[in-house]
Image (cartoon, rainbow, N blue to C red; front, top):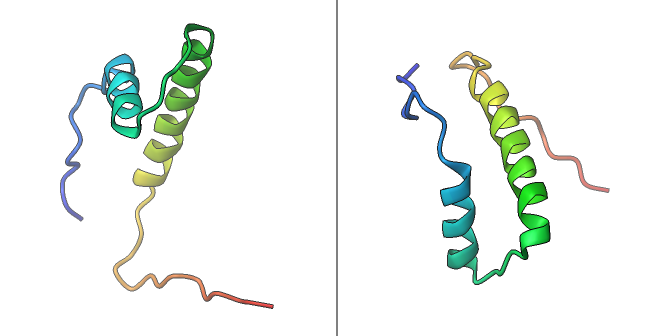
Length: 67
């Protein structure tokens, strides 16, 4: 398993929010800023849980079933 490429300190979500919004051409109204940042914090924690779950090298993706 490769070393964690992420920095030891969490990213500044205020800066990320501004940069992502500008990149996507979005305007985040002041009333929505706190909920957007809260969502980014939740997503960061969910990603950390997934990142921390070790998978063996022989793990394969689940099959796709279509109706």
